[in-house]
Length: 317
Image 1 (cartoon, rainbow, N blue to C red):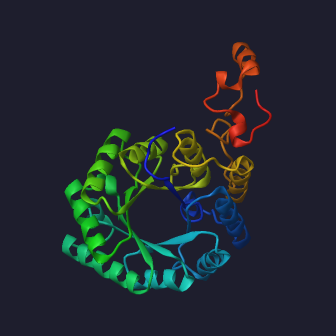
Image 2 (spheres, rainbow, N blue to C red):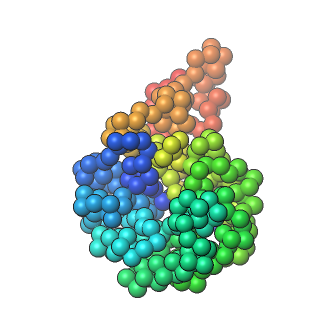
């Protein structure tokens, strides 16, 4: 067991990031409610939903999940009043305001000078707070943003009243040793503010980066069931949760729910889970070598990193 600080919070974004996993994917109202209910049973700390500013359907789904009163609900918003109004009218607890500040963002996304971006950060957070919303402020493309500029953007957000700041590895480029050092610096500068991490898997490093960020002092991780997300996806909620349980950083999960929610999200998204995926893959605890099978028959832990029963598996080998 670890002497790590209080429980790491899981901010599940299956219903937002998962919708962006590939062209044509969507979750119906009933599917969204099913996923949200299972996530609540699983024990996630916040559910990030779809973008209510997009259209009436997204607003309706967001409102329906809010009305379930399961746990805190957060939704994305660009740094403008119309997106924040949409979040407010949908009844969410949190709004996740995001904007990029680095040269790439200024050239290809917002196309504003840095002074205008800083003013926009302050004005949008001021407005959200005036509506009674909690605010998570994300610097888009954090990993390609100069550290001093990153800290300056966070400072503007915190001055305006942001309740949480978020480091977003938008293109999945950062490495574990790098994120650990950056998180240490951010926490040293803003020790009292919650810090969230959002890691894409373009280089296959999302899980490693999440754990390294936690080692550095981050206390919230954005994740999605089956790792659904843009391009190569993001940190997998289920694999992360089991890893955190293994390390003593979260309480044990309800075993029967792990495979259930993975299967449902795979069905609803039409994205089957690879047989070799950690935790929920069909072959994650399968042994075929004769030596291995004999050893596992004597003691399941001989060739498994955890007891398969820990995640609800009864038949394996």
